[in-house]
Image 1 (tube, rainbow, N blue to C red):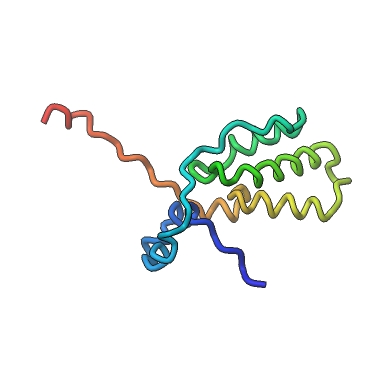
Image 2 (spheres, rainbow, N blue to C red):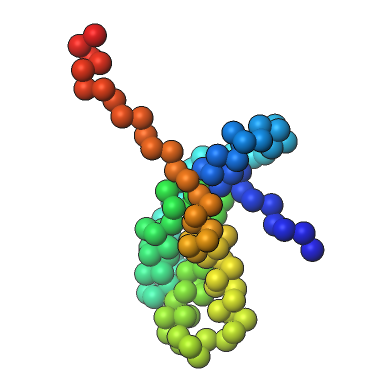
Length: 129
């Protein structure tokens, strides 16, 4: 089984298209998801809702969009389960939680692959020119 395809927004944030412009060309007709993640689903319980909020607050800036809602929901449910059961959580679910966090760029090794461009600082004197 091959390695999962890395999301375009992650490639953009890491600068991969600058290194290899043909990768961007191969993705020109890819659907765009410009909407934010939105509010959490109403079906989440108290701890699951807290997990959703924590995931969203700690995710790398610019990574999560509306298309990631299901992934964030699954990760929130697993994280709430981990909070409840800790070391007694089933190994398969713990592995799935780690994988889900990695796909959201929330593990140290995955986060190190994401770089966010600093916003351009405006010269305060430019308005006088």
